[in-house]
Image (cartoon, rainbow, N blue to C red; front, side, top):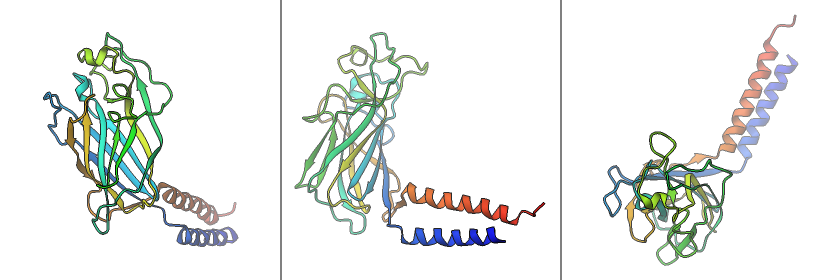
Length: 255
C-alpha cells in the first residue's frame, strides 16, 4: 500500500511539473511542389520543405523528391518565403536573421553514374537573403554567399539503387559535390514566436536564377495549428510509463 501511495504522490508531482513548465509550442507546416511541376526545360521537378517555428528559431528541412534526375535543371537550389502572424494574418516584417547551422550529406557522382558512400553530415554552404522592406526571405545556393554550382540538392539514384543515368550535367563533376537527402537549416530570427508561420513559399531549381515553382501547403495548413514540443510529450510519456510500472507492482500480491 505504501508503494501505491508513493505512486499517487509521484503522479501529483508530475502533474504540477507539467502545469508550471514553460510553454514550448511549435508551429509546423510542410510545402511541396504541385503534381506535374516542371522546370523551364519541361523536365519534372519535385521537392518538399518542412518548416518549424519556435521562439527565435526557424528550422527548415529541404528534400528533393525526384529520383534519377535527367539534368542539373532538376536539382533543388533555393527556397523562398515570407513570414506572417498566424493569429492576425498580418505580415511579419523582418528585422534580421542568420543561419546558425546547416547539415546535409555530400554526394559526388562519377562519370559512369556511380556515387560515393555517404559520410558524416557537412554544412550545406547555402546563404540567407533578407528583403526587410517586403518581409521576405530566400534560403539559397544560387545567391551571393551560396556554393553554386556545387551543393544543390539532388534526389536518389535510378531504380537499381547504384547509378544515376542523367546527362553529362549530372555526371561530369562540374556540379559536385551535391547535397543528398533531407538538408536542414536552423535560422535565428529576433522576435520570432511560434505563431509566426512560413507563407508564399516557392522552390528554385537548376544552377541559374529564375526557375521558380510555387509551393503548395500540404500539412497543418489551417490557421491556429500548433504542436507541443517533443520534450514535453516525452516527459509526460516517461512519467506515465514509470507510474504504470509502480502501480502494477503495488497491486501485485506478496508471495
